[in-house]
Length: 370
Image 1: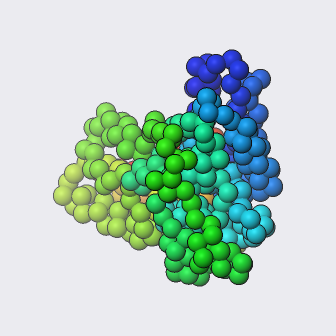
Image 2: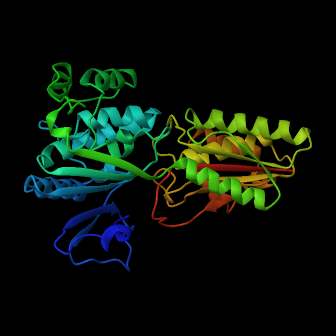
């Protein structure tokens, strides 16, 4: 994103680029932009220092300045700036608990907004009276722009009470001082009517729907009927995998040659904290077990940023013999129950490894049926 806009900026413009470790592009090293690689999905000290660098930079802006925010999914972890009274270690623990809870991304981000000095519109509020314009790549089901990267430049309609309810629902442990702050509304975010948010504008430059439409064009070029299941699917990844397997079997029984295409962001309720896997591989493993070796059904599921969960794969592939390659159905079931979908597909030599993709428009799932 920074490379795309760099040549359109005035020479005196300066910036900070924060990306995931190993994701900096070697062929893009502008003199006027610092490039920082931080941890994702759990924040680290490097990201915390980067957030303070960003906040210091916007504090220096004046009425005639423009802050351009290029934002994609992942920024919630890459720019950690805990509210007063919350340590980075505590923020890391809360993030891990949210990731393991099975909470949808929008609910996770409501909590993140209220525990941050930079999210939920606070970055734009700090930049005022400078104007702020955010250009975002959506990884959020429904493309709610204020949820992308937890919306550092977007006024936040959610409340401390909303955040506290989510914390209680998923039994997330937080320090007592932070709980009291939420109960008293001390950590409230800037709202749409806040005067500091009146010089803010925002736009989307890429969406999950664009990815799904490109997939539709691709499968139709190979003679498949595209069956579009939606670009904003959420819910339990295992249940979603079973449902898609059932639908694939039904369409196959009708004699249709088709491709089931879906986007969105499913969730996994982690039972084994030491397990290895992500939502795409978990979805696909549940799907493979439900298909149980049915011939002429193949497919894949992958996160468009190249990272499924916290592993090195974007996702995985499925074909009729994949359970056999994993060591059999019993072994596959054991892997699923122990949150080891990554290891199951690794055993089958079925991991989808892309490396950094340079974008993030959420997950793509395709099942080819003949």
